[in-house]
Length: 200
Image (cartoon, rainbow, N blue to C red; front, top):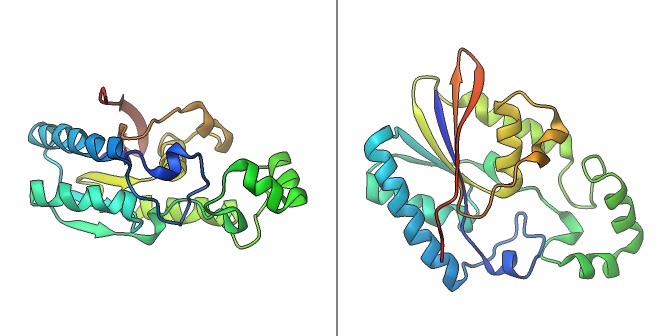
């Protein structure tokens, strides 16, 4: 089984450094240009790798690119809620400065234990990780899958597919518009590629 994990391209929220988990954020002009280049790259890779199916987060910054890729390759596309980004609850759509001003005590507790503290209205880390693990388990073992998703979800998938410790996901700096290829051989994960096109 081969899995190609794709992080979405640049959005306004990325540029403004906002906590856009489940909230929407439009592409920047650079993001639109990145999308064109990313699609060209993926179509070329499809000719060599022979992708079988595309999966995407329903959040538009991932879904829009997945839909265009499906049109270009004529591959089936499945939206899956389990591929959504982490929900930042009361901090959704805010910058770090705005979040700290909004709820100083919550911010302080979150910073003390980022991977354990549950933000009000947000995702519980263990539940978030479990839904990603459940998605991975549903992937057909005999196909090459392309998955359009988000930074946090992507890092968690890499950590799980490579059977690493939970906190080791932070060792991976996966830039916007990057492609990660992982191959599973008898349930053993191998990182084959971590590629970022040279975006303008």
